[in-house]
Every structure is written in structure tokens, then in C-alpha cells.
Length: 391
Ligand code: PSV
Ligand code: MN
Ligand code: MN
Image (tube, rainbow, N blue to C red; front, side):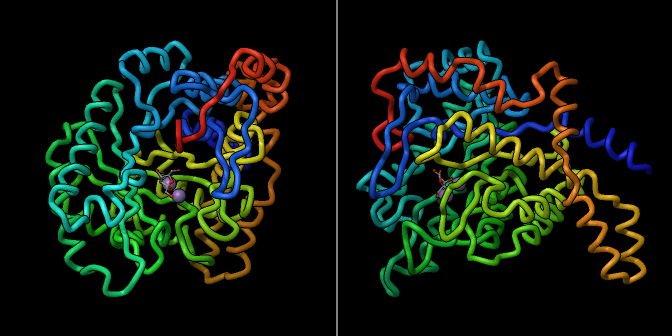
């Protein structure tokens, strides 16, 4: 295959590559020290979707929005889905939330008290109803459950209770639904989390059945973890359900994807391309999970989408025949050079061409800035909501 062929193939693959945006990226957010309010932030889930639609309008690559329940609770989810359609986007994954209720202080789906477990299961069944009303297919579960002190509770007993609670939720899925199960190494608990790693998530998914898949949040690992190795493993067994993309320097920083380590993002996307998992029907949902504490939110989401697109374009440009040949020969430096050649390619002209082919401006950042939308929402919206807490 020639360079020109690879370029054409990359353009074609990128045309159908969509990234899902989180509704909570558009609200005010911060750290436990301070939430800095910004002018024009959405006052309700309808306005969050309108803002997410701006990102799609200028990138052509962000056609869905994930919701978080109860942060995005509305009376009529059919109306919210219709609003999304009017804005040219769709509702994506529905995130449950069992981390802000006093009842869940010692656990939710793992809690020792059957009453609390039943309440947490019922919340997930409510999320399935939201999925039915919005046409969403993915129920995304991240649990805050865990322990702060050795001996605080029985590690193994909690796994048994978790398996049983998940089974009850799984049994309520419609045929087109999936559970996508996220893991996180630590936080809010520090001795152990009940789903701390991909192995634990995968074991629960395998026990549940084919409609359960793992979510890999790039910020949820120990420093230096080889994330692309995990991606390759999960793809091999057909259980990579989704990404929560973001960047981290220290902990679960939720910074813009590709800002801390664009090379890692490229390596991840290469494993995706290698497994032919970029296709919209591959079963991998490419989502962002980010908060923008100090930067403007819509431009930050546009930047995040273009960062993912750039890493993906580079991964698509890898000369896989040459790589395979170098690997077969045992040519260590040659194989590494093939990968680095692709990584070092400036793909911005390719992405500009992609956008022009879609009838968009070549530079989405400039086009959004020129649109006047930020000025309009700053004057029209007063009293914007926080991303989650208090939304
Ligand atoms: C937890 O840290 C997490 O990554 C989960 O995906 C939550 O739903 C999300 O963050 C909330 O921002
Ligand atoms: Mn996440
Ligand atoms: Mn997180």
C-alpha cells in the first residue's frame, strides 16, 4: 500500500469515527478547594446538550452525549432526546450515580445491608428506563464502593454481593442494552476499591454474559501502567466496551485527553486500529470523561475531540506492512522507526481536508470562536449549574 492509499484509507475511517461527549463537561466544575463559575454555563440538561451540539457542529465528530443520572434528571426524557435530535446529536451512555447519597457511605451494590443494595439496584433499573426513553444502549456503571481500612469489611464477601447485585441489573437489560463496567484504582476509597482494575471488571463481565463489557478510563491506573497493553488484551477477548478518555499527571485529574501524553494516546489508538475496532459497529464506545475547571468548556471539548482525531489519524497512517515485516525480521530499531514515523507525521492538514470534505471549516477552534455562541450564552444564561454536585 502506498502513502497515498494509506492517507485515503485514513480519511475514510475518520469520516465515520465518532467521539461521545459527557454532559458534565459543560457545567461548572472544580476541585474540593474551589469551583470557578464561568459565564454562560448551562442551567439544565437541555442547555448542556445544546452546548455539546456546538462541538459536533464544528468538528463533525461528536455525535452523541452521555448523561449522568440524577445530575441530568428531567421530567420527560423523550423530550430531551427530541431536543438532542433537533440539535443534530443523540443521547449516548447513561451513567448511574451511587456516590452522593449518605446511604452509600459504606458501599452501594456491595453494601452489607440488603436494603441499601436493593436501593442501588433500583437506581440502575431507573437508569434502564431512561435508556428506553432516550434510545440509549449503554448503562455505564462506576462504583465508589471500597474500603479505607484493612478489616473494615470482608473483601471476598463484597465481591459475592457485587456479583449478585450486578446479576439483578443484567437480568433487567433489553436485548440491545449493555452494561459497561468501569474500574478505578483508588478514590474515594484508599485501601481497596471493589472494582480496582480491568481484571476484576472483566471477571464480573464474563460471569454476567455477552452484554457486559469493560470501560477503560485512562485516568484510573497507577502511574506508568501500560494502558495499550490492557486495550490489546480486552480487544482480544471482545470485552472492551468503551473508553472514558482524559489525561492525568498525578491522580484522576480529568484533564483534556491528549494533553498530558499524546504519545500514549497514539499507542492506544494504534491498538484500536490494529484490531479494526475503529468501525462504528466494533462495540467500542469512544467517550470523553473530563471536567474543565479553569478553561472554557466548549473550546476544551473541541480541543479534546481534535486531540483524539490527531492520535487516531497518526495510528491509521502506520505502515502496517512495513511494521509487520520489521517485526518478523526481528528488526527492533526498524519496527520502532515505522511506528515513530507515523507518530511524527503532522496530520493537521489531513484533518483539515477531512473537515472540508464534510462541509465544515478546516479549523474548528477558529470557527467556534468566530461564531459568537460564547457571547450569546453569556448574555442569555444567568445562574449556570455546577457540573454535577448541585446540578
Ligand atoms: C469516576 O472517577 C468517574 O471516572 C466515573 O466515570 C464517573 O461517572 C465520572 O468519573 C464522573 O465524573
Ligand atoms: Mn470515568
Ligand atoms: Mn474518573
